[in-house]
Length: 307
Image (cartoon, rainbow, N blue to C red; front, side, top):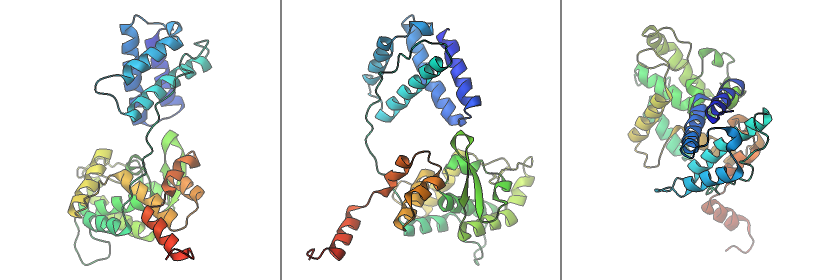
């Protein structure tokens, strides 16, 4: 099979049969497009011509590029190539996997950075006034407060939150979230977040929905269209600036903070895994790190000869 045809079949497989998110499929398409260009430049147009030596040469050339690619980008590229060739073997298109000996670069272990509880509260107050208070709020402020409250209360990814429909909140104090691979999970919603969302639904969304085409999405923009990931990101950036937070704040920062604060409060790591929608507990365990200051405090308070 021609390589371009093989790539096209694989991309349709991950998009339709595996149901991967649009941005994940776009990343695969970008990586495999570069792979296809490299193969074409080396006069390789049939999948049967790709040998382990060819894959190794491609990986080595990409790794030695100037400027050097980030280890995460190189790892993702190699993962895309391995996924393609494993698929071709499973489908009987190729007899062997030429990427079998490809080893991704070792990624540096980066501990997620979480906000303190005080910083989260400042961020929430900067997004919009709390529901039930005396401060008047615009439709945008009510929406922004509800959005930030929900991100922190559920630990959901920003892509998951902007895809929520109003009906996903129909179960009261729980939320139905559609995660990676279209997998659904149920996440509790705390009283503060629920109050903020209820205020938005009652006092802001009816006005916003009349400006558009009646979208079922929970969060809408000023013209009534579904709120995009980029717009949700901008909401958080404005709130972080208004709260005078010097630390980098992104939607994923709130996800990290959600997990860290739960574990610090005594939650079981497997419960947090379920809430975050991680397929492996190993992914969740990166949140179980303990700061040096916390170690010192515990040591000083319990060791008989610490003082």
